[in-house]
Image (cartoon, rainbow, N blue to C red; front, side, top):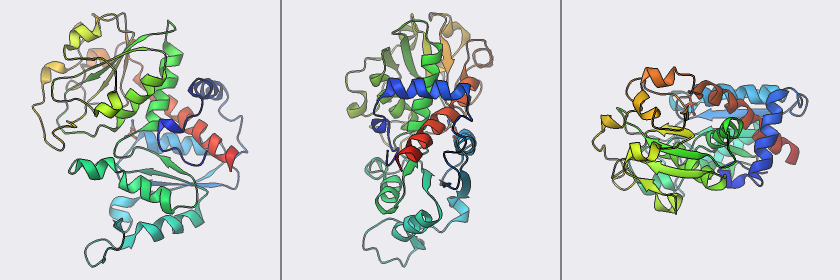
Length: 315
Ligand code: CP
């Protein structure tokens, strides 16, 4: 595998999920695979889980890890072709990507949507330019439109916890004080289309994701109706795709409560974290036995480790 940009780079989902679950039982089974190899992690945005789980995954494989917070510490990058660079940007991605490629064997990048210009965000300017100019594999640690490491994690977690071959999985929008990108929801939707699941999306009107991504997935604008018989409730806030960059009314009645969870088939509660307690979800749900968010976060290590293993094996 050259790059892990989206879940389309997974050639056999079922096999990869099984391999990650095996890896979790013995995380150091490939502890020499990455010896004398270096991964560079570039962050244009904050992180807790992605940063530490990807480092942990690399260390489990014997790799060296270098981390750089680009915002505030790196030179401000230019991406345009032929730009006269007489404004604020100091370095072109052409040089930056090639330079980093000399220091590292694998590069992983986090660069969120700015939520100002839909066309620019959905062009994936940062990740696509690094993939274009880097001479080493590039891993997406959450880009403007996708979070494929999170989606692989979610597939692992659902596989571990499902009680039937084809569980009902509901992706529910929930309120949030800030407008958030669609990346996690986009990748989760794509992942559920690959898995054997009865998959339903529920959100208030106006929060439709890109129809090229949701395709035929049923959308229920009635959250409580969608929750009926659910085996997994996956919760995430995202901002409007159609009214891009605008802050629509934040309907607090969409918060996840104990009463709503009681409508489900004893569903597991999932969230990628970080989560705003008592805005997105009540304490009573997040602290309940059915909440698997901490285990979900633990699985971030094995999703990342599997991806790095695939890259190292194909180098
Ligand atoms: N879920 C996730 O990506 O967490 P961080 O933003 O903390 O990395």
